[in-house]
Figure 1 (spheres, rainbow, N blue to C red):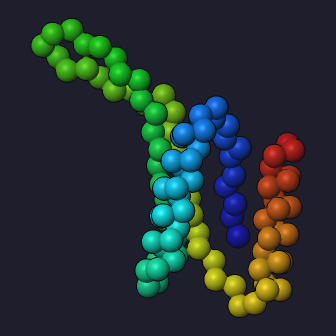
Figure 2: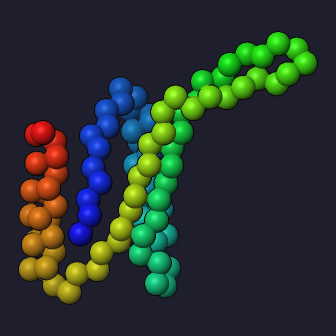
Figure 3: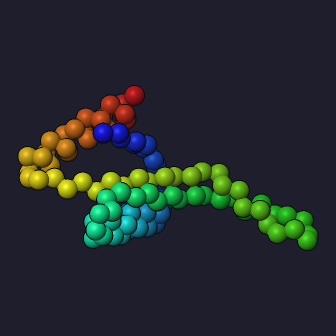
Length: 97
C-alpha cells in the first residue's frame, strides 16, 4: 500500500470549506460508480501576469495541489479499525519527520 501525504495549511476558511465540499462530492461520486475506486483532483493556483498590447495576459501556476482519493471497501469493523490504525501510524511518521 502506498501513501502520499502532504500537510497543507491555508489561512482561508472559505477555501478550506470549498475544498472539503468538492473532495466529498468527488469521493461520493467515486463510491456510487461501478468499478471506479480511485481518482485525482488537481488544484492549481495562478498568478496573472500582465502582457503588453497586443498580447494576452499570461497565467503562471505558482503552486499545484494534487489530491488523490482511493475508496476502500472493508469487509467488517475489524478491517476498518486495522486500516485506521495503519493509516494513522503512517501519517504520524510522515508529519513528525
